[in-house]
Image 1: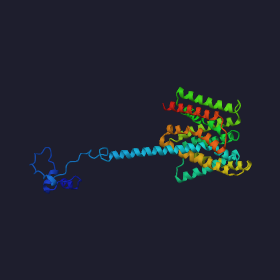
Image 2: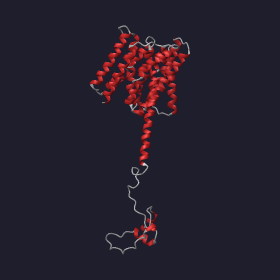
Image 3: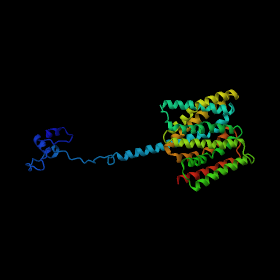
Image 4: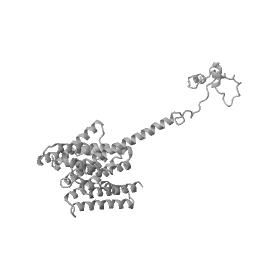
Length: 364
């Protein structure tokens, strides 16, 4: 029966005498005498199929392997280009935040502007979360999301908006240009990583440049707007640091999305109080600034930024962000008609050099 069942196997059988084919399949036991020699199977087209080596026609040896490798390389290149474009869009969106805020303050008070801006951004983020059917974050994620919400959703927008009631956007752009250094230093303290001395030297040099610029622009003493800006640096750096930690478990856009949704009750109450006590004078600039700050800066900018950073990596993306302060200076001139002092672009470039040194020190 074993010999008959062999006919069901997928191994090809020689065409010829059926008895000969069956005998060729049934090998005699080792202890039995040798059986008489079987007739040789016919050769040629009717002969047995040649044995197939088990490693024959593997993907690496197949003729299509070079083409497959070329396709994978092309996909990686296309992904890198797409990631770079997304990260650049994020930087452009962020660079427009201060000019949009300055426009929004033409129609709203600072408290109502920040609250309404966050409410609109939370509505957009909630729509994206529902469309993607994103699951609720785990309980262990909520303390970190609270830090992100307090730093990025509430603290940084409110403090920078209060600063822009007295300071120019170009002045604020130079001060907030210190944000990458502040974030890197706070992240080092938060994670316990010990950067090199070159890192700390560049960080201190960048802080000294910004402090000297602010003192020179403020007549030798820090103004209330400068105090708001320095506090905004710490708040945003804390939010970015905790958001980067959460992004190991959650997609980056969901981190900011859930932080916005978590703050929605607080911002609704703030919007109601702010609109009741602060005058509102709707205008084209005010509405455009509010919509861009809510949709462009708060949600869309962070969405494309995180997507791009996931494609090209944080070090390469952070190199692109070095252009943000200079772009803000250009927008302040083009959109707001501000007159730049020679110290503003010089200080911004000096800060960029310090940031570049810290990034090289971190990567090294």
